[in-house]
Image 1 (spheres, rainbow, N blue to C red):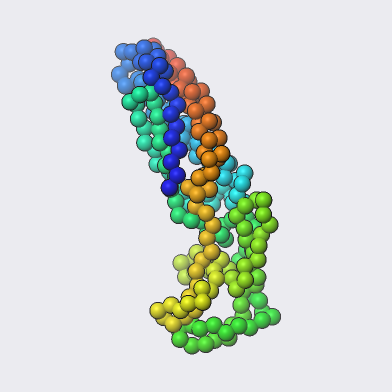
Image 2 (image 1 turned 60 degrees about the vertical axis):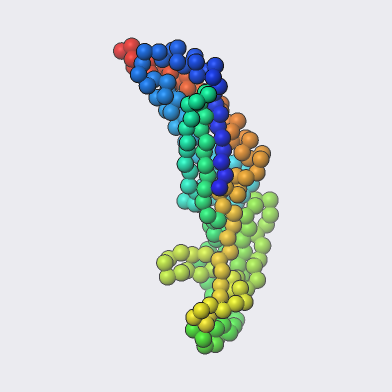
Length: 216
Protein backbone atom coordinates (compact mmCIF):
# COMPACT_ATOMS: atom_id res chain seq x y z
CA UNK A 1 0.00 0.00 0.00
CA UNK A 2 1.28 3.50 -0.87
CA UNK A 3 -0.22 6.67 0.60
CA UNK A 4 0.20 10.07 -1.04
CA UNK A 5 -0.72 12.92 1.28
CA UNK A 6 -1.88 16.06 -0.54
CA UNK A 7 -1.92 19.03 1.86
CA UNK A 8 -2.98 21.59 -0.65
CA UNK A 9 -4.07 24.52 1.48
CA UNK A 10 -3.42 25.85 4.95
CA UNK A 11 -5.55 27.72 7.46
CA UNK A 12 -5.06 31.06 5.70
CA UNK A 13 -6.55 29.78 2.45
CA UNK A 14 -9.38 28.10 4.32
CA UNK A 15 -10.23 31.40 6.06
CA UNK A 16 -10.22 33.21 2.71
CA UNK A 17 -12.63 30.63 1.28
CA UNK A 18 -14.88 31.02 4.31
CA UNK A 19 -15.07 34.78 3.80
CA UNK A 20 -15.76 34.54 0.07
CA UNK A 21 -18.37 31.83 0.51
CA UNK A 22 -19.92 33.19 3.71
CA UNK A 23 -23.68 32.84 3.64
CA UNK A 24 -23.62 30.00 1.11
CA UNK A 25 -24.59 26.80 2.96
CA UNK A 26 -21.89 24.14 2.53
CA UNK A 27 -20.02 26.38 0.10
CA UNK A 28 -16.54 25.81 1.55
CA UNK A 29 -16.88 22.05 1.67
CA UNK A 30 -18.45 21.92 -1.78
CA UNK A 31 -15.66 23.97 -3.37
CA UNK A 32 -12.95 22.04 -1.55
CA UNK A 33 -14.31 18.60 -2.35
CA UNK A 34 -15.00 19.44 -5.96
CA UNK A 35 -11.49 20.84 -6.43
CA UNK A 36 -9.93 17.89 -4.63
CA UNK A 37 -11.99 15.41 -6.67
CA UNK A 38 -10.55 16.89 -9.87
CA UNK A 39 -7.11 16.84 -8.29
CA UNK A 40 -7.38 13.16 -7.40
CA UNK A 41 -8.45 12.36 -10.97
CA UNK A 42 -5.43 14.32 -12.17
CA UNK A 43 -3.26 12.45 -9.66
CA UNK A 44 -4.44 9.06 -10.90
CA UNK A 45 -3.64 9.98 -14.49
CA UNK A 46 -0.23 11.32 -13.55
CA UNK A 47 0.58 8.32 -11.37
CA UNK A 48 0.26 6.11 -14.44
CA UNK A 49 2.45 8.50 -16.42
CA UNK A 50 5.05 8.56 -13.64
CA UNK A 51 5.12 4.78 -13.47
CA UNK A 52 5.45 4.45 -17.23
CA UNK A 53 8.45 6.78 -17.29
CA UNK A 54 10.38 4.00 -15.54
CA UNK A 55 8.39 0.81 -16.06
CA UNK A 56 7.50 -0.82 -19.36
CA UNK A 57 3.80 -1.39 -18.77
CA UNK A 58 0.66 -0.20 -20.61
CA UNK A 59 -1.51 2.33 -18.76
CA UNK A 60 -4.54 0.02 -19.09
CA UNK A 61 -2.72 -2.70 -17.13
CA UNK A 62 -1.89 -0.20 -14.38
CA UNK A 63 -5.51 0.91 -14.05
CA UNK A 64 -6.72 -2.70 -14.02
CA UNK A 65 -4.38 -3.54 -11.15
CA UNK A 66 -4.78 -0.55 -8.84
CA UNK A 67 -7.26 0.34 -6.15
CA UNK A 68 -7.47 3.99 -5.13
CA UNK A 69 -9.27 5.39 -2.09
CA UNK A 70 -9.38 8.99 -0.87
CA UNK A 71 -9.90 10.43 2.61
CA UNK A 72 -10.62 14.16 2.94
CA UNK A 73 -9.97 16.39 5.92
CA UNK A 74 -11.13 19.99 6.50
CA UNK A 75 -9.58 20.48 9.94
CA UNK A 76 -6.62 22.81 9.46
CA UNK A 77 -6.92 23.65 5.81
CA UNK A 78 -7.82 21.08 3.19
CA UNK A 79 -5.99 17.80 2.83
CA UNK A 80 -6.52 14.48 1.08
CA UNK A 81 -4.80 11.18 1.73
CA UNK A 82 -4.79 9.17 -1.48
CA UNK A 83 -4.12 5.49 -0.87
CA UNK A 84 -2.91 3.30 -3.71
CA UNK A 85 -3.34 -0.42 -3.17
CA UNK A 86 -3.18 -3.48 -5.37
CA UNK A 87 -1.57 -6.86 -5.81
CA UNK A 88 1.54 -7.61 -7.79
CA UNK A 89 1.02 -7.41 -11.54
CA UNK A 90 1.76 -10.53 -13.63
CA UNK A 91 5.02 -10.16 -15.55
CA UNK A 92 3.11 -11.15 -18.66
CA UNK A 93 1.28 -7.80 -18.56
CA UNK A 94 4.48 -5.79 -18.83
CA UNK A 95 5.81 -4.72 -22.21
CA UNK A 96 8.44 -6.91 -23.84
CA UNK A 97 6.83 -10.16 -22.65
CA UNK A 98 7.00 -12.91 -25.27
CA UNK A 99 5.59 -15.03 -26.70
CA UNK A 100 2.32 -13.10 -26.92
CA UNK A 101 0.29 -16.32 -26.70
CA UNK A 102 0.92 -19.82 -25.33
CA UNK A 103 3.26 -21.48 -27.86
CA UNK A 104 4.85 -24.93 -27.84
CA UNK A 105 8.38 -25.69 -28.98
CA UNK A 106 7.59 -28.60 -31.30
CA UNK A 107 11.28 -29.25 -31.83
CA UNK A 108 11.79 -30.51 -28.25
CA UNK A 109 10.22 -32.93 -25.79
CA UNK A 110 10.39 -32.93 -21.98
CA UNK A 111 9.06 -35.23 -19.29
CA UNK A 112 6.71 -33.78 -16.69
CA UNK A 113 4.70 -35.26 -13.84
CA UNK A 114 0.96 -34.80 -14.32
CA UNK A 115 -1.49 -36.44 -11.93
CA UNK A 116 1.15 -38.81 -10.62
CA UNK A 117 2.21 -40.00 -14.08
CA UNK A 118 5.21 -39.05 -16.19
CA UNK A 119 4.27 -37.66 -19.56
CA UNK A 120 6.31 -36.51 -22.53
CA UNK A 121 5.19 -33.13 -23.85
CA UNK A 122 6.44 -30.29 -26.00
CA UNK A 123 7.73 -27.49 -23.74
CA UNK A 124 6.80 -23.87 -24.25
CA UNK A 125 8.99 -21.70 -26.45
CA UNK A 126 11.61 -19.60 -24.61
CA UNK A 127 10.00 -16.84 -22.55
CA UNK A 128 11.28 -13.30 -22.23
CA UNK A 129 10.17 -10.40 -20.06
CA UNK A 130 11.22 -7.40 -17.96
CA UNK A 131 9.81 -4.53 -15.91
CA UNK A 132 12.12 -1.55 -16.33
CA UNK A 133 12.48 0.39 -19.56
CA UNK A 134 16.18 0.70 -18.84
CA UNK A 135 16.69 -3.07 -19.18
CA UNK A 136 16.28 -5.43 -22.11
CA UNK A 137 13.84 -8.33 -21.78
CA UNK A 138 15.60 -11.31 -20.15
CA UNK A 139 15.11 -14.97 -20.99
CA UNK A 140 13.65 -17.12 -18.20
CA UNK A 141 14.84 -20.72 -18.12
CA UNK A 142 12.18 -23.43 -17.82
CA UNK A 143 9.40 -20.83 -18.05
CA UNK A 144 6.42 -20.88 -20.38
CA UNK A 145 3.33 -18.86 -21.28
CA UNK A 146 0.10 -20.69 -20.46
CA UNK A 147 -3.62 -20.05 -20.36
CA UNK A 148 -5.43 -21.22 -17.23
CA UNK A 149 -8.95 -22.69 -17.23
CA UNK A 150 -10.19 -19.31 -15.98
CA UNK A 151 -8.85 -17.70 -19.18
CA UNK A 152 -5.99 -15.97 -17.35
CA UNK A 153 -2.75 -15.92 -19.36
CA UNK A 154 0.59 -15.60 -17.62
CA UNK A 155 4.24 -16.62 -17.50
CA UNK A 156 4.76 -19.70 -15.34
CA UNK A 157 7.77 -21.62 -14.11
CA UNK A 158 8.24 -24.98 -12.42
CA UNK A 159 9.25 -24.66 -8.77
CA UNK A 160 10.77 -28.12 -8.51
CA UNK A 161 8.10 -29.12 -6.00
CA UNK A 162 4.96 -31.21 -6.30
CA UNK A 163 1.30 -30.33 -5.86
CA UNK A 164 -1.11 -32.30 -3.69
CA UNK A 165 -2.39 -33.86 -6.93
CA UNK A 166 1.08 -35.21 -7.69
CA UNK A 167 1.81 -32.84 -10.55
CA UNK A 168 4.84 -30.63 -11.05
CA UNK A 169 4.22 -27.46 -9.08
CA UNK A 170 4.36 -24.21 -11.03
CA UNK A 171 4.21 -20.57 -9.99
CA UNK A 172 3.42 -17.44 -11.95
CA UNK A 173 6.19 -14.90 -12.44
CA UNK A 174 5.02 -11.54 -11.08
CA UNK A 175 6.21 -7.98 -11.41
CA UNK A 176 5.79 -5.10 -8.96
CA UNK A 177 2.47 -3.80 -7.66
CA UNK A 178 1.29 -0.22 -8.26
CA UNK A 179 2.17 0.79 -4.65
CA UNK A 180 5.67 -0.65 -5.09
CA UNK A 181 6.18 1.24 -8.34
CA UNK A 182 5.01 4.45 -6.68
CA UNK A 183 7.19 3.82 -3.63
CA UNK A 184 10.15 5.72 -5.02
CA UNK A 185 10.54 9.11 -3.22
CA UNK A 186 11.26 10.98 -6.45
CA UNK A 187 8.05 9.64 -8.01
CA UNK A 188 5.76 10.55 -5.09
CA UNK A 189 7.44 13.96 -4.66
CA UNK A 190 6.75 14.86 -8.27
CA UNK A 191 3.14 13.63 -8.03
CA UNK A 192 2.38 15.67 -4.90
CA UNK A 193 3.94 18.80 -6.39
CA UNK A 194 1.77 18.56 -9.51
CA UNK A 195 -1.31 17.69 -7.44
CA UNK A 196 -0.94 20.81 -5.28
CA UNK A 197 -0.64 22.99 -8.39
CA UNK A 198 -3.73 21.38 -9.87
CA UNK A 199 -5.72 21.79 -6.65
CA UNK A 200 -4.96 25.50 -6.36
CA UNK A 201 -5.95 26.01 -9.99
CA UNK A 202 -9.23 24.12 -9.58
CA UNK A 203 -10.06 25.74 -6.23
CA UNK A 204 -10.23 29.23 -7.74
CA UNK A 205 -12.44 27.88 -10.50
CA UNK A 206 -14.82 26.15 -8.05
CA UNK A 207 -15.08 29.22 -5.78
CA UNK A 208 -15.97 31.43 -8.74
CA UNK A 209 -18.47 28.87 -10.05
CA UNK A 210 -20.26 28.73 -6.67
CA UNK A 211 -20.29 32.53 -6.32
CA UNK A 212 -21.63 33.04 -9.85
CA UNK A 213 -24.27 30.35 -9.39
CA UNK A 214 -25.35 31.83 -6.03
CA UNK A 215 -25.65 35.33 -7.45
CA UNK A 216 -27.76 34.19 -10.39
